[in-house]
Image (cartoon, rainbow, N blue to C red; front, side, top):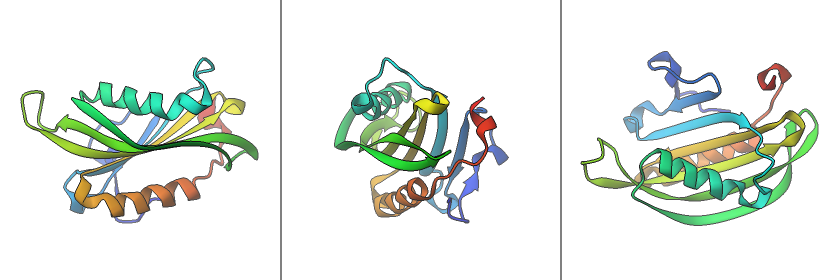
Length: 158
């Protein structure tokens, strides 16, 4: 469950249909949570999925370097219509230019969980971004969100 003080980004910018994006207003846009539903990739091994998506995000965001702090994959019961799924967690830092390619780079902490649900043909990404000074707060948000995540409407995946 998202903390009540976080803002749904779709209230002030376009957000793709396959994403939910939240921002913390007091962090001046430097903390965000993205929940994304992607097509399940059967060519991607479960134990490599989190690292693949972490690196893909770094590339898409124009990160100049990345550092992976932790990577673990485990089978866990996430309530996706009563079927056990594989969940991979990864965290690290992307060095990114926040104001465009020519601006100085800054470290951005990225916490990501990848839930691989072959039964609904989906890879579900939960990605949290923060500057390092907000690490403990964003880790609490990430852990709470992943632990409380529930799906109740199968039509999301059709």
